[in-house]
Amino acid sequence: MKNWTHRNGAARALLAAALAAALLAPSCGGPYKPKRLNVAGDKIALADGLFARGKYGDAAVEYKDFLTTFAGDDRSDYAQFRLAESYRLDGQYALAEIECRLLINEFGYSQYVDDAYYLEAVSAFRQAPRVERDQTKTYEALTRLKRFLEIFPKSDRTDEARGTMREIHDRLGEKEFLNARLYFSRKAYDAALIYFNKVIEGYPETTWAARSRYYRAFIRERTGDAAGAAEDYRAVIAAPGNVPERAEARRRLEPAGTRAGGAKRDGGGSQ
Image (tube, rainbow, N blue to C red; front, side, top):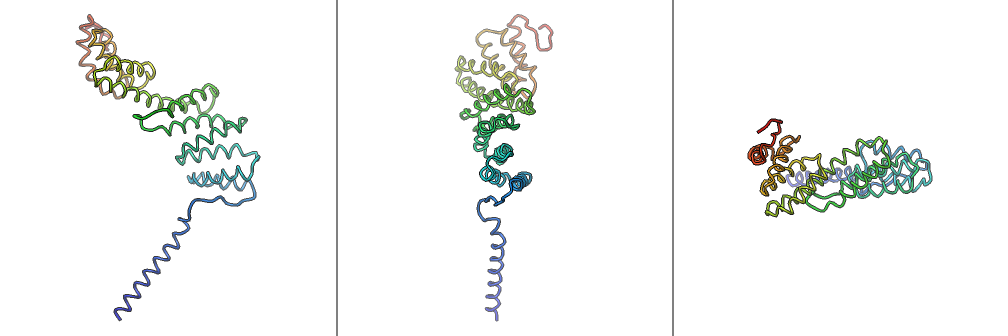
């Protein structure tokens, strides 16, 4: 009796496992496949529904199938734009970049062309690796953003584009700052100064520019340019945001100002 009970329990466990597998099978049935629909409007509605629910990978499949099945439809530019957006929001930035370019090249008349110019730049930027590595994609994105702002100065995307440009400047400024700090740590001050100046002149609104001015001040102080050093220290102290070198700049400003012959402090008073 005991053996039968054991066998019966094992059978029930196997049956339960089989039922669970059967229930899970539809969700593990491989990649999404496009639905066969003969009406263009129904196809777009299906794709839009998937997009609205955040199923961007599935939506991309449907938009792509729409463009193949209903080639020449008046909504093709819309489907092309949504295809690019589906890839972008799904994190497939390389594909998004390609589809934005196709929209620009094939649907130049479209109301979505300005969006495509901007989002092509964003997609390129999102492919950039860590700041320590090569930033070719970041430079590509910057070039495309500048082109977008030149071609579409009144686009609804201009404010967004300027925000993205600030983000790009921050990344490139950090890249050059790290290069400068490397030379500075090795006491190769001439080489370091080239990179610090590049940050200060090229990305003046970033924190990296303020930090670079501290190190430039330090180098100027070493080479006897006390007035230039004092000027940079004051700029570091007055800079907005979190500048780690601010306190040290304040400490070094007084002796630098004294050597400069009474240079003015950041508060405007005489020393």
